[in-house]
Image 1: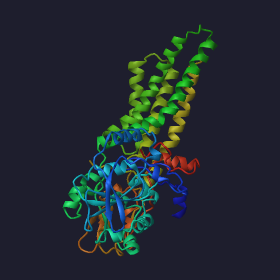
Image 2: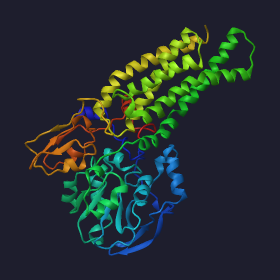
Image 3: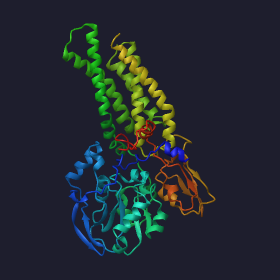
Image 4: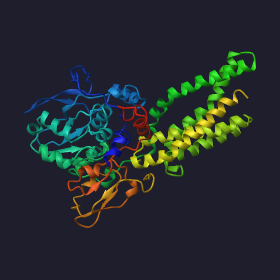
Length: 381
Length: 95
């Protein structure tokens, strides 16, 4: 079992909590003093020292920051200094929430806390969201115990309870935290939006609060980063198509007209653009309605539909070689991109994805390889 | 809407003899895999919904639940097979 784990050192991804990735190595001390803190409003004094108070309203820079991170811009360095924070005017009886130091997690939490008085411990998850950090173990027992001591939580509150996001549970052993720190772990709801109701009920989560959701909206916010990721390969493809058109014109001895060359390249790119959108946007959007269970299969189906639509309606008369090549390549590309959405989904298991890749990947490679060969050949026939 | 991935693949195992019915697994599971089974025990009601996050096993003080934890991310698996070290997901998945 241990070997298997090392074979697949897979540690992050997934879940509706967005964003994760390779956390930067954290051997050097962070220079948090220079961090801009527009979200800080005043301080609160405690027996353990002065504590910064956090605003519960997001401003424009927060919204812009979230938008950028969704598109993959600067999201690897979007963090909050770890430590103890106050929300409202907490006292020694106020509840204590624990969260990750990914700025988006922090923002989504604090905007739900207006009107509440509580303590907030931000632990150092290297700027990774709760779910991914729990999977990596950075949102884990050791960091929580260490942080409780560091902020001297024993002196700040008189009770001995901390509330963790439920999605931290893969990284945290509640019974170990209690043993080592004296604080009892209570798993709060999955979504920050349920925290006020959860606290109102005296720390009881309904079954609904405990389930991860993956609605259309939840899936669609994850698609920009999928699109952003294929941008680079898509540009390479565009350059390759331009090169192929150029070569084909030269070899056939036709006159070289640049506007026509561009026009052809753009037209040749259209089928690929459709396949990219089928895999990165349409498959996530239509996920529950597409038949079958494997993501690659769902993407492949949409890819086939697109390839057929393209060949019958958009470019009839492409010739048998190019048509066959499109039919091989486009669904394979859509299948591959759809398969990559497994990491963003909330319900795929490692065992399942390994199985899916076992049959999908060889098929994709063969189909894409044959398709690419056909596409290239079609330029010179 | 409850999503289901491939059938009969997960590594989740539950040992009813060790279970004392504390219900922590029910609480931490984001997929509703466990349900109470009378007093003093739980039962696995929806095994195929398991995403192998490992929350149940990690939080079971009695060691009654075991699962090989991991993340179902094709890109990460691909990268680890290609021996690209250091990153779990690179920039691609885990948005």
